[in-house]
Length: 84
Image 1 (cartoon, one colour):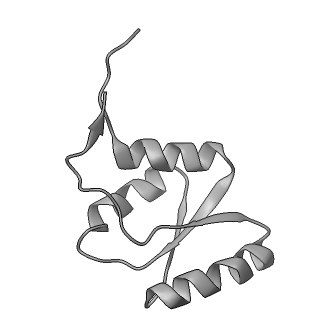
Image 2 (cartoon, rainbow, N blue to C red; image 1 turned 90 degrees about the horizontal axis):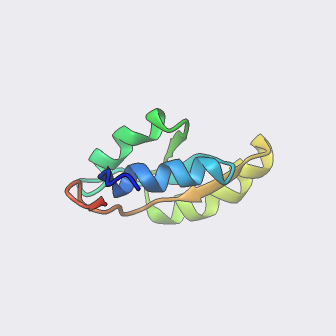
């Protein structure tokens, strides 16, 4: 068994992609800006919203129009969290 460290956010986005999710809705902020850098690396599309209400209400319509499965990410873990 290999003991490799991985950022939690990278693991999360990789798993979301593996589950068929291709778009992530959310509100950019100080706590998740670093996490957003991992989206494109993992094949996910960022759909930014102005506030949490818009993110929650816009996602179902976006998914229907784009024939996608989506996920809402409003807050993310700090950059220093890793899985080993």
